Length: 132
Length: 81
Image 1: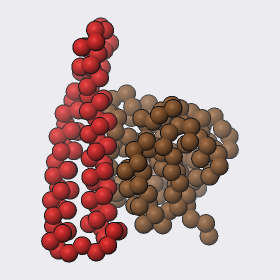
Image 2 (image 1 turned 90 degrees about the vertical axis):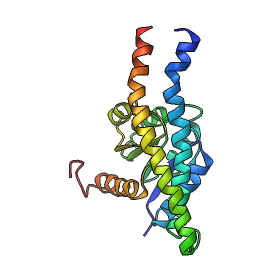
Image 3 (image 1 turned 60 degrees about the vertical axis):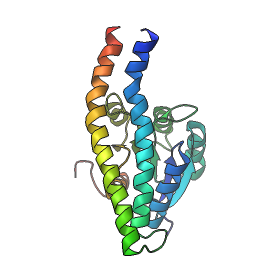
């Protein structure tokens, strides 16, 4: 059985590396992107099961990536969890209204993030409703 | 908006981004060490990394309180001018 694939999008190399180690240790396959353009390319080429998305990115921010994802019928089902250093005001509501499954400010506890990932995957696979 | 006022208004966003990313790195790699993902630590090593993590959490609490309080005020400055 194929591993669940997560696309990690963050312009900070160290954060990409740390998330990658944590996610792989929990059995996920990880692909990485560092800006909005490479994130869009990876979405199309890799078809991840979930996206961990930073908002502050070069070449277009995380909202641009979410917009591209949701406008593509073959990608729009992929859940997005926003993990950002940006302030809450103006970003949390905008991200959730744009379709993000969850919004976290950095730093987030590993257990909290892993739980949100599992829940978002369960919802996208139809095994759980959002309000459960 | 004048440039100094713009800089004041942008300060919370700048601080949030820079400090939260740095804290996230400390948290991620501290927990990677504590959880043994980079090899088993001695008791003493584990204790020291835990001290780093505890203090990173304190900084995070200060940031949450300070920046989430500051950001809405800065937004008001932006809209008034």
